[in-house]
Length: 70
Image 1 (cartoon, rainbow, N blue to C red):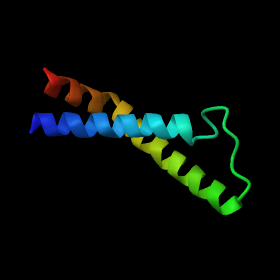
Image 2 (image 1 turned 180 degrees about the vertical axis):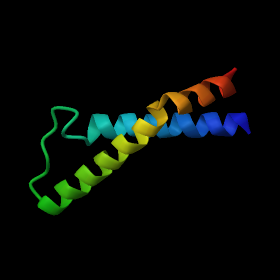
Image 3 (image 1 turned 45 degrees about the vertical axis):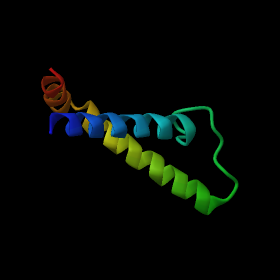
Image 4 (image 1 turned 90 degrees about the horizontal axis):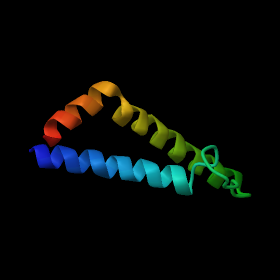
């Protein structure tokens, strides 16, 4: 079970990093697309990824994941 929890946390963290790197205009040098609907969709995905990363970065969550990794 611990392996599954760690795999899930790692996967979510990698996804968040990838979204931040490739899609989050606020976090990088990217330029939003000209299509306002698509730009809003990307902004929504990037915002949700930021929320998820805040949860993973929470010290309480980090402590649990670190304890499981030992």
